Figure (cartoon, helix red, strand yellow):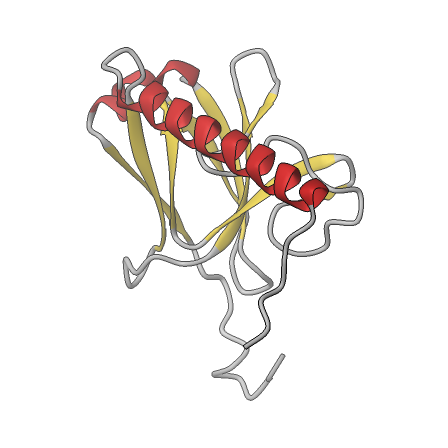
Length: 152
């Protein structure tokens, strides 16, 4: 059996990358487990069925600065076409029905887009909303193209 030997350069790179990842992961977990950093969950649901739906969300803090849900990348690739993207210089984060936010960022204005069959949801999440621990944002369906024989 032949054993491949890893080059010293490759070994140093992997040790450095692993060390950075571990230190980032440990500091991230420590930061959000402290009592000073309270979080809450937002659910995006179909208004009629109350089932969670995937959508793209845009979030702004009280100063109008874009913020992202916890766990999403802070910066985007210029070529981003799926997931978290920019449309007309506005950042939208893709969520699969729920996301977490830091309570310290409240109040937050939101805009949520979910395809052609749903209206755009806009509103604000206040500190009082965040105290409940879970905020539900309903998406109203204004059309059902599948029921009308359309298939997109």
